[in-house]
Image 1 (tube, rainbow, N blue to C red):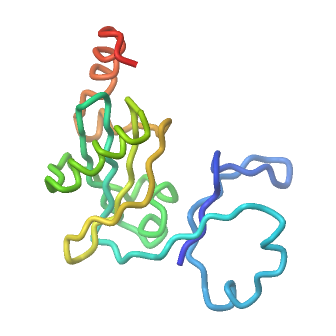
Image 2: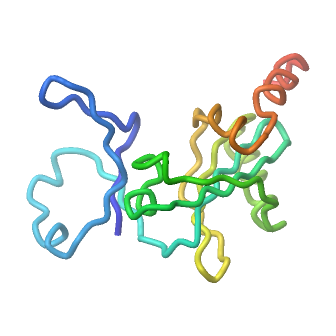
Length: 159
């Protein structure tokens, strides 16, 4: 099981700002839940990973980039070690493409950043959709025209 922050993944601590990354929980973490009632928590089942994928949907355009982790820290949360990552533009299974478009329709979104784990068996496991998720770094590393697609959508007045 893992735990993640709700909202902005940053905390102020010891006079500085730190990123609160996804963290795997151990049996001892789960054995002592004192104070859990004091705030909201997000827990997810751990899924074994071959790699992860960020799916960016802009209007009806779907772009997918595989994110491969080259370190233990990046395998738990790829934000923990950007230098250990490699990227590749990939094509999602048809059922994933249809699914993300259905979520976009159900939530009345025109932009969404979806995160998936792809298991060693090739199964896509949905983690979350962020209606304000970042994408800028993917344009260069995976040659994906995201800003251009967003500009085209906005120029068409579709919002």
